[in-house]
Image (cartoon, rainbow, N blue to C red):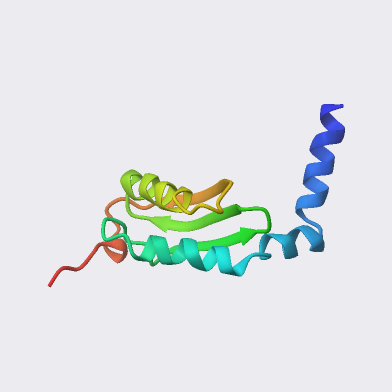
Length: 103
């Protein structure tokens, strides 16, 4: 039974319908992206956000630290419509390209 469930999940995740559904809620994705961008504690320029219908938000890309990763999760989870977060963020500690510039 487990093999059948695994196959079903794997097969559905690669179908065109599943891929279309992942891009299915651009308004929610925009609200999450705005929340990330509005958080002064978080450098979110390298975080991509997509959302499925039903409130599943996908975060992918690169963050500068574990703290940034955790803050991105908190910010996304603070949006009322978000029901689940799928996180695929890579941590690039010490990466000069992700450093915040202060004037």
